[in-house]
Length: 192
Image (cartoon, rainbow, N blue to C red):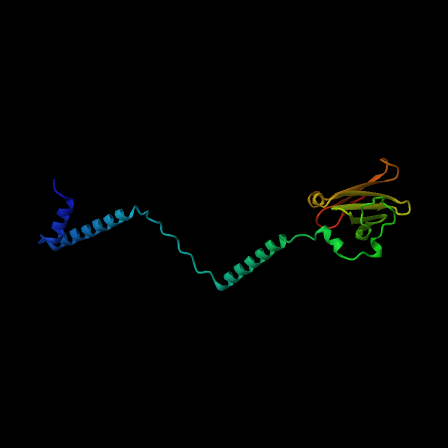
C-alpha cells in the first residue's frame, strides 16, 4: 500500500513530467499541510462573513448620545427616594403643631407633635412616644373635639405605616374618614 503523502511529495519535488502537474502537486501539498496544522490546533469553525454596515454619521451619533443621556437621567430620577415621613420631626415645633384636644396618651412626647395635613374640618398630626413608637392623630371638627389616634413601633411604621378612622355623625352611622400615613410622603386623607 502506497503512502499518499509520499506520492504527493514525489510529484511535487521530483523531476516533473510537466510544469503544470508539479505546480498542482505543490498546491495540494500546501493545502494538505495547512489542513494538518488546523487539525493539530483543534477543529476550527468557519465563521460566516458579517454584513458590512455603513458608517454612522456625526448627526446620528449626537442623537444617540442625547438619547442615552436622557434615558440615564430618567433611570436615575426614578430611583430617587421620596421624602421620608419621619423627616417632619427634624424641624422645630410651631404653634400650628399643637393639638386642639387632649388625646389622653401619657407616653406621647408633647414636644414631638407635628401638624402633617389638613382638609376642611380635619387636621392630622404625627408624634413620637417616649419609647420607640410613633402615633398618628386625626381631629375632626375641633369645636366638638372628636379625634382618633393610632400608635405603633417605629419598625412597624417603616414597614406598613399607620391608619386612623373616624366617623362624621353618630357612631357607625356617619361618613367614614380614613387617614393613612406611610413611611414615605405625606398622609392621605380619604373623606367624602
